[in-house]
Image (cartoon, rainbow, N blue to C red):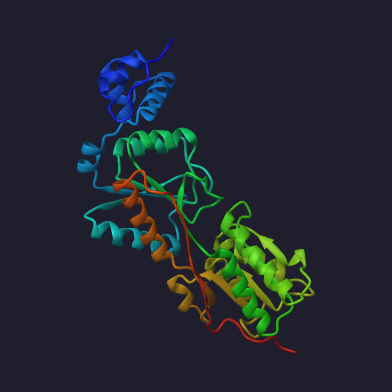
Length: 340
């Protein structure tokens, strides 16, 4: 079957239906994310809508009052900081925020896109996720822009993203420990499949190399960004005969876990082991001792991502950008010179 090309910017439902050899109601179902259309037909219609530059600008934007915020897991202070930043900008623009869970760090659950197409938010902010080519096309045909916040991997060139200077944060945390006189510095890393984890680890290694300290790979223990991983990794590291005198944790939750590991082993922070975290969540300043950590501007990152997704809504042809905000070290009571 040969398909007649529809003139970009001038498509009507009737033209799309004619070229796809389907009824107008079928095109409407695809456009509005409803069921009842086979995968093959849906794909053919999506392709025509995309190539034709089809736009629902006058309808979707008037009706849509939502920004969709997609997490892999909503279970920490980190998540609450992100929500706070998105809500602040959404409220300024008369919008509400809807939260959904994607089902994984690096990929979205299969039915996620169907919910998005039904709700038709004015924009989507993704945490730790990228989109498949098909998902990008489906969102583009409905003029639903998206921004990746704190990307898990290196975003595609056609993806706008907002992150932070993770390498610089890892460098600053480790430099601080080196400057205190530590030489056996361990790191509890986050998942190495995630870009932020690799960048923080690279910063840690760069600081050691800068100080002329040999890198001991046995002092790096990777896990998830969870409290339990900090307990497990901290226990392994601090049970060694040649235990480290300092530990840099990939996030504050892991650092709290290292605190617990030290306590169980009869060690005192920072007398026996200095600990540095990452993120600077509110409870970092409530711990005993208060946690030295790298401040990641989570609220500001979320605000920036929300403003960016709204700018893309208003100007779909806006140049896509990748923004990395600065991090800074917050020195508190969990770090001190090594004893002896």
